[in-house]
Length: 138
Ligand code: CMP
Image (cartoon, rainbow, N blue to C red):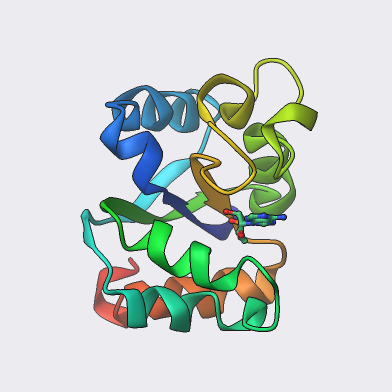
């Protein structure tokens, strides 16, 4: 029960062999994994996912990085899912992330920061629908 958020384990964390440890932290924090996939994004699809950042100086690098290896997008469910998940992952820049957070443990840099978490209920729905059909969201 509860509401939902969207997350994605990023290429640096999958390539480093940390996806299992990260999924374990997510489940131990009380999130139910509603849907999960593993595949590679094209640079074009990565650009679409991060379209809101297209005017940012880091947009081109971000597209390249997000298409550089396997990603694991997922939909998660828990009470207060969006806010609790952002607490679990920690600050965007791992240098600012609190001890015990996923990014503090596994992120390599502000760009290669191991994992994504939606910043609102509205974006959680938009981002989940980007990767999963309605039939995959039960
Ligand atoms: P996330 O918050 O999941 O979504 C936007 C991503 O852009 C962010 O994670 C980082 O991977 C990347 N990003 C954000 N800020 C910067 C930055 N200043 N320099 C490089 N990459 C960034």
